[in-house]
Length: 311
Ligand code: G3H
Ligand code: 13P
Ligand code: ZN
Image 1: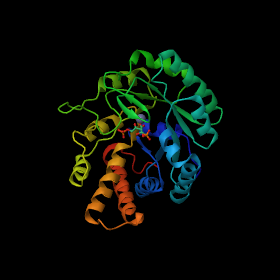
Image 2 (image 1 turned 30 degrees about the horizontal axis):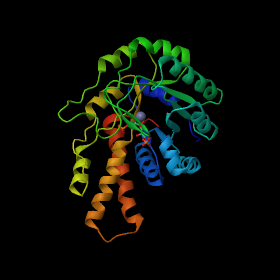
Image 3 (image 1 turned 120 degrees about the vertical axis):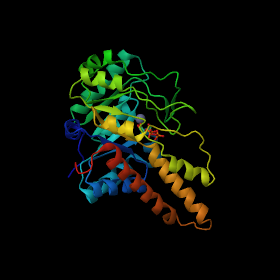
């Protein structure tokens, strides 16, 4: 089957009370690990590429690797641009085979965000590509943008109907307390999500797919494995899995996960070298790293997203 956009996936996810995992991809092993898990569990997938991933691996390499995964798995897979920050970047990805793009205008004023999103939607929809937009600001780091907790702000439910109506976007990323990276909360701070805001948005936009960014759980087992093998990641903390499970049952149809994959991969490679200091064949440490990605994605699909068997 060819790459799909997110329309059908989100419709089924909304109606079925589950969410699709959107996993960030940067190289072959990550793509293989994610898609092997999804294949075994018969789960639909969103593979997403950031501007940084595109710079690192090259657009064409990533598209071809995802096409290979599609051929091998025959799953419904959407290839999505993560955090597109300009019309030009979105256009490049649409012209270059992506089936979904995010235009992240959340760093602009409300009116500028509307204008930019609308422009991307017009271009994308004419080519069968779906568009995710963002309202509200998450804390954390993505590419070169570092939003401090003070500058982050929750999505205002009073704006969502106007924003979605005027832009025509297909899904909306909201800020309810998640944040990017492995350090989502200050030491001693209790992880909390504003489910009241999510419910209010769901009430105002019935049937409309909502997206959660910054949704890694920063699983302590992997942080401990990194620290036990020469790393230093004090106070790494993420969103508890039970909160994400609750979100997946609501209007949230897409849950973004990157940091948990990075942690699993890095922890596994650190452990490998601690145990095998003289090895130098990349296949020897990349094979267990790929398996760690696969296990992490399987855990997300069954434990958090509930999208197993929904391909
Ligand atoms: O939200 C951002 C993703 O984790 C991608 O991160 O921009 O470092 O590739 P990146
Ligand atoms: P995490 O850093 O929590 O994995 O979030 C990833 C993300 O939102 C990608 O857009
Ligand atoms: Zn994000």
